[in-house]
Image 1 (tube, rainbow, N blue to C red):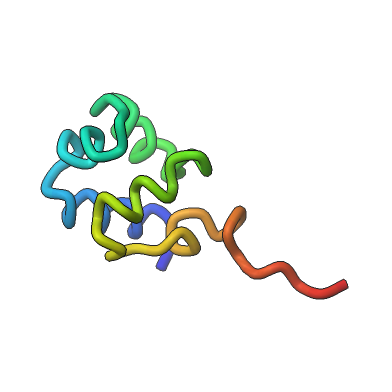
Image 2: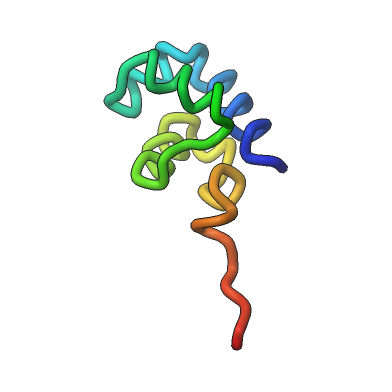
Length: 72
């Protein structure tokens, strides 16, 4: 799942951008910015996962941060 779709799913599961924002301790405008950029700040990923009861994973939201590292 792409990060943008994962964020949309998290918002739907939370009920609204406002509800997700409240659960994450940020403003609705912050969530709107996440939607606009398609990227949740790495420091907020786990609060989004918790707010949507695990409907999306940290890997879904930020594969660049939480993805598997290849062995070098």
